Each structure stands twice: as C-alpha cells, then as structure tokens.
Length: 317
Length: 184
Image (cartoon, rainbow over all chains, first blue to last red):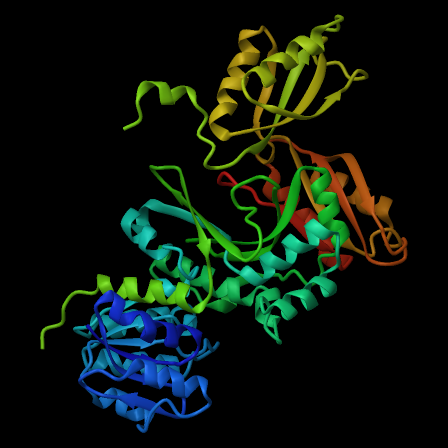
C-alpha cells in the first residue's frame, strides 16, 4: 500500500520509519507547515533527519499530500476535542476521494463517530483506528474478532501517565505533586499533563470503545470523568491495608462511559504497574479477555497503525 | 489442547484475586482451625479472619468471615474443600458481589462531621458501617482519607454507591468506589 502520513510527531515519524518493514511505501509525510511528497516513495530517512534537525520535512506544501497518488491516509495529527479539526477534514477529504484512512488521532473517532461512518458508507475506502485505543495493544481488533454484539463491556487502564503516578504513590508512599514532578523529569508525564491526570485522555478512548460497541451515539460530553489529582498518598495506604490499590479505571458499555479512580484488588489483573495499560473485554459467551501491553509511544502506536493498514482490502484503481 | 494432567494445575495467568468467604462454625474448640485447613490445602492464601464471637446466626452458630487470595481457578476447589470438610459455607465469592463493600473517601473528612457522614450512609443507604480506617498524615484539619467497609444487602450496591456519591458531592469528598463487575 502507498501511505500518505499526516502528522510528524512520534507516531507519524515511527509509521514512516517502520512502513517498509511491513511492505508499504511512504509517498507523503507532512506536518502542519511542510511536506515531503514523491509518488515513487519519499526518502524517509532524509525527511526524518531534517525534521529532527529542525528543518522542514521536505520542499512541498502539506496540501500536495492530497494531490499525490496514495492508497491510505494515515491521520496522526494531534488529537483535538469538539469539532476534532483539522483531523476530521483530512479524513473527509480522503474518504470523499475514495481512499482508505487509518487514524491514530482520537478526536474524530471520539467526537464525530456517526459522521465518520456516514462518510465511509459513501466511499470506496474504509476507516480503521486501532491505534486510537491502547497503543500497541490489540483492543479494537479483538472486539472485531469477537464481534461487537458479543462484547458487553470493556474496562481497564488506558492512560500510562496516570497509572505510573498511582503506582509510584502506592509504592513509595509519596503524594501526587511529588510523583508528578518525578514523572515529568523522567519524560513519562508531559509538561502539561492535564489531559492525562484529569481523565480526559482515557475518557476519549473509552468513548471510542462505547461507539464501537453501540455503533455510535457517544462523544466526550457523554462521559462521566474524574481524575486522580485529588488522590493523596494516604488513600492508597488505606486501600493497601485492605489488599487493594487505586487505579484510574475506565468503563465503556452500550449504556455509557465512566472514568475515575477506583479500588481494585492489589494483585488483580487490572492493577498493572508503571506505564503499562490493560483492557478487560467482557464477552457474552467466552468470559473475560485481558489484553495488556504498552499503551503509548511512537513505535508501539505505529505498529497498531501498520497492522490496520495490513487489514485493509485492496482498492480498485 | 491441554492434556489431562494440566487440569490439576492452577491457571495463574489472571493473577490471584481476593475473596471473602462467610462460614458458620459450631462453638467448639478446634472448629476454627479445622475450617481453615482446606483453604491452605487447596492453594489459598489466608489474608484475615473475622471471628464474630458476639454474634450468633439464626441457627445458633458463630459467623466467621475469612478473606483469602487465590487464583480464580482454585477458588471453587477451596469452597468445595470447605464443604467436604463439613464446614457450612454461607456465602462465597468476590467481595463486591456479596454483602460487603469498601469505599475510600478523600477530603476534609474529620472536621466535616465524620460521625454524621457515617450515620447518613447507614440511614440513607440502609447499610451497616463495619469498619472505618482513617489516615490523616497532615492533621485532622487537613485533607484526610477514610476507608469505610459497609455491609449491605446483596444486589443493592448500585443504590449504596449512589447515596455515598451524593453525600460525597455535598461534602466535597472524592469518592473512590470499588470496581464492580467483571473479574477485576
């Protein structure tokens, strides 16, 4: 497949870097200001070197991405809330011109799911978005394999930063502010960790899961969301006295979405440690499935994007 | 396909889980010890025992509550082992399914009428506060945490959570509920 990649952050760059290993060609790579476009395949190494050196990715205008011949648009621009722009427009343009779209950007899938599906229905192309939920962990493909109708609920930990903070607080008996500062030093938490610690990032993923289970109907404003900012070290100590710990747990079902700090058994499956993520997929006929792994990171998320590309049917020219 | 011998081995992939088993014991010497043996014999790890000597069940026995950990696949064997040993098991299962649940409250708990909070939970949620554990590392006039263990009627956890949530919202507490459902 010929990939046109929008967004040159960690995920976009890793997709470009790993594409050839998966047997795909990169014909375009763009950030918000510049692009490298070549219908015969761009020189990925050179474009990445330039980007990391602070130079433009290439000599082209990002607009040229849509004018070149490609099969799959990889939407890896930063997640935005509300109208989910400019990601939503990128997806629209690709589908309207009968191309496939693989998203790593959560915005359009969480906030405008029904519109995406309507656009897909009128297009020769398909959309896939495994990378939006749980990074490298196969969550949506597991639900697809079980069929969404046979899945009653999905629960779990889908934010590594919040999980890291709670794990460290419990292990070291430290308070939130202290551990957050440590996480920022380690690069686990971003300079502005708001969306990670207030539950928004996890909520977007569980909104996407609820949309998949119910075939749409949800956006972020439908979710009940609480963060971990108010959890002191003493609460984790009390939980531990009782063989429990506290994790930022999300729940998605056809009824709705809820994300908040919850008590879970200390040695239970959902009490993963550090930045690890886990989902528990509750099925009608086969009990619970647990998928765990790295929920973020450039190469990790890129593998989910490239697995999606591999699942796409060939397009008729 | 697993061969026959694999059936005897606990599948530990899902880790161990905490369970609460309620037993009824005859008030005779050695009964408690006898009742606990099948737990360890079947691979369970004993966490705590509540021997409620003051209480008597309708049948005139003494209720004992045992918290234990085991791999989920071993739990049925433990209950079976108890019953084989002639121990009367009233209730067995993951704690949240049954008659007991814990919540953690965070906020200005002590100076915000702690005993009033507890009696409201008991009255409005029709629950019994069994146990309270308080941690106030910065003094009782600062943010503190409380873990409250409630005994409730089976199947009423949703109503109870709702009451605790609304009291929490009123008093500006952060309420950390247990995760109910699925095998967490």
